[in-house]
Amino acid sequence: MRHARAVVTGGSGFLGSHLCEALLAQDISVVCLDNLLTGTSRNIAHLTDRRDFRFLRRDLTEPVHVPGDVGYVFHLASSASPADYLRYPIQTLEVGSQGTRNALELAEEKGARFVLASTSEVYGDPLVHPQPETYWGNVNPVGPRSVYDEAKRFGEALTSAFRHSRGLDTGIVRIFNSYGPRMRPDDGRAIPTFLRQALTGEDLTVTGDGSQTRSICHVHDTVRGIIALAMADHPGPVNIGSPYEISMADLAGLIVELTGSRSRIRFVDRPQDDPKVRRPDTTLAEKVLDWQPRCGIEEGLRSTIEWFSRELLVAKPA
Image (cartoon, rainbow, N blue to C red; front, side):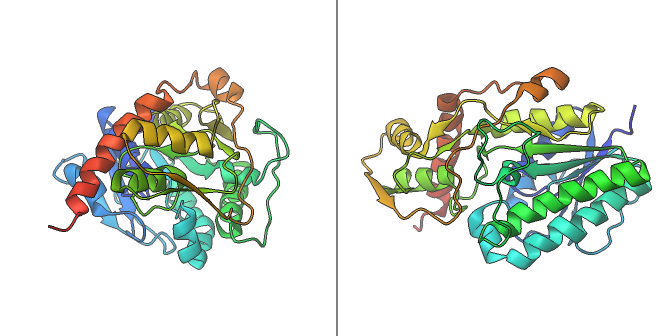
C-alpha cells in the first residue's frame, strides 16, 4: 500500500481540480501545485479549508520540494486548449519537458508512483482509426499544434526513460477530449465554445464542413480512469476516452437542442492540422483497468450546460 497522499500538478485547472476532489473522496490527501497560468484558484476554493488539502503556488519548471511522504504524483500541469498553448507556446514546451522532469524527480525522491497525463494529441491527425496505444501517430512537428503535441510526446519518452533506466514506478494515460463543469467559457475548445455561443445567442462556429469527429468523455469518467491507472501496476500508455464519436456539426446541433437556443450554426475556416477523426480503442483500459465510461453524451452535456449557465450569469455585467 502506498502512502495515502498525492501531489497533483496543474491541480487548479479544469481536469486537475476534479482529480483533487476525487482523490479526497477516496481519503487520499492532496497537495495541489499550480502556477495559475491557465488554472484558477476558483476551481479549488471549496477545498482550501480542508485539512487534507494544501495548495502551493509553484512553477513546475523550477525544482520543487514537497515536505512529507507522498504515495502518488499526478502530472497534469500544461496548457491544454489550443487557445492557451498558442498563447503560451514556450511555457507549454517547458512544462512538458523540464516540468515533467521535475515532477518525475519528485516522485523518485518520495518513492511514489508517477502518472503522466498525456493526450490523444500524440496521435496527431491519425491515419489509423480508432487509435490503439500501439499506433505511433501522424504529427506535424513544426505545425501550430506541435508545441502541445510534441511536449506530450517528449513527456511520454522521458517518463519511459525514468522507468527503464531508474526503475521508477510510472504510468501514462492518454486522455481523449474530456469535458464538463469548470471549463472556461473562453477555453477555445469545441464544447465550451459551443455552449457559450448557444447560451448567449451567438452563432455556433463550426470549423470546416463539420464532418470531423471527436469522442467526448465526461470529466468524472476521465478522472476514474486516471485513478484506476494510478492504483494499478500497468505502465501504460492507456487510452482513456469514449469509444463513441460524434461529428462537430452534430455536436453543435445537439447543444442547440439541449440549451433551447435560437442560435444558428455557421461554418468557418478549419485550423491547420486539425484532426479529421478521433476515437480511442479502449480495449486495453477495459482489460487492465476494468474501466469504461458511464456518462452518456446527453447526460454529461446537461450537467455542463447547468454549470455554464450559472457561470455566464455570474460573469454578466449588471
